[in-house]
Length: 58
View 1 (cartoon, rainbow, N blue to C red):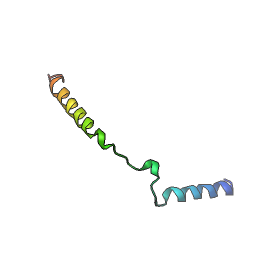
View 2 (cartoon, rainbow, N blue to C red):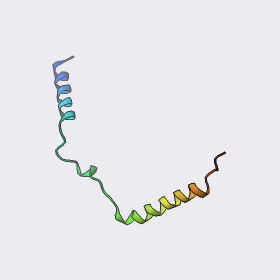
View 3 (cartoon, one colour):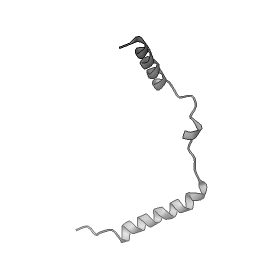
View 4 (cartoon, rainbow, N blue to C red):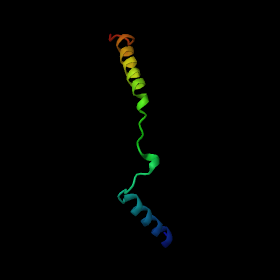
């Protein structure tokens, strides 16, 4: 293995294993509060469909 490749691997390993100081803005969690009602409604629909439309156990 060449010296340059070995140095690049060591640098990569160091960067991968170092502590993250700042989370990039693109990875910051975002929440659209306006969709909470739709989320709740969809959960209710799924639960009701499982209760009433599901196949009975045989």
